Image (cartoon, rainbow, N blue to C red; front, side, top):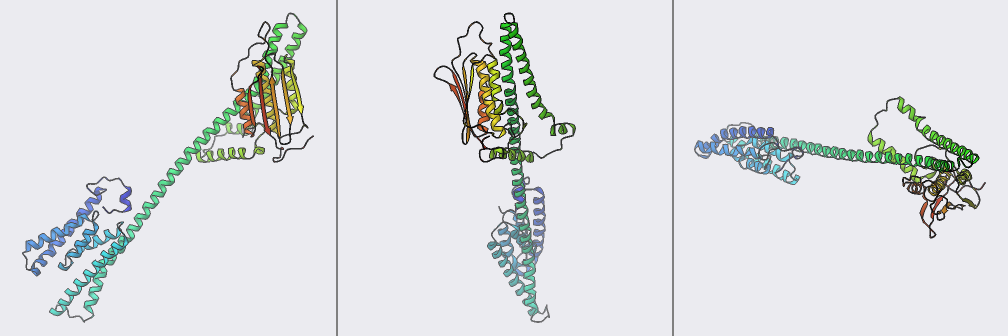
Length: 461
């Protein structure tokens, strides 16, 4: 079946080979008109050929009804119209057949060959009939009239339907191509929207993970020290009131420090654009734009670490702890009863804020884990300033036997080591942790360094 582009894209709802009932009704009407025309012309054909009139009428009806097949077999319709041209039948069938043939998806050489055959047949038949009329005296025009009439009739019966069919076929194919492109673009946009939604969900998950990690880093260490001091306070409250007062003061200091850090962190979420976003309605933003912005921000943060904020994420406060506070951190653990030593190798330097924060948080979390799981064990904290990296190691020995007066067991969420590893990996560093041969535990991390302005390592101070 030879069809046009429009028929390819529409769902078939009509009978047989028609895609629509409207097309079937149109073809049936044209076939009925063609059959009536050929039946009327069959009377004259029967007289000229010396045949009975019913034979000529029946032949005309059958030949004209072939137009019903124009959409399925346009070549057959054109060939039948050419075949009955000598009988001066099928003018409507010839016009409609040539139009359908030219509008179909058949090769141009086939369309040209059949159109040429129809032109030649019409030219010859018209020339012979006109010449016979001149010979009989029915026409008294000059010799130029017969060729002029033949050529004009052949062109008029062939060129208009072929040109119109070619135009309609090209237009339908163009519309089909445009529809396919529109469908393709719609599918691409849908895919982009789905990917943008996935990226937005990934960004939300990353933000939730970052906030959870920050809260863990801020709260876990301070609260762990507070619990240790509270346990010591309970143990010496009656025996040594002076020491109990000192421990109570330390607990208060730890609590105030924890509240201060929490207040600073939550303040970032409540100020600036956050307040404006809560006070004003949020405008509708295309999902693809949200995904593109999230992907661009994540790509920038991954490609250029110097462009990240100081907390090691794509968002967050720029203020935070630094390596200059490491002595105070170790002192707090020592005040809680831990035997801890700090050693620093190499020239002390100033690093980018996120490098110093990450190094500080690694040591802080490692000391917190010692309080939780190895209370009373001797701990060594080592910090090494190298040419292009900074290394840190926290190693504790085997904890003493659990007995009377042992430190209180602290709860653990199991996310401390994972959070440290994520922080170090985000800066392109290496993180390793595991038990030692003597029954202790070791946490090691190496972070590549860069200056606050990015690029090369900063100079010493």
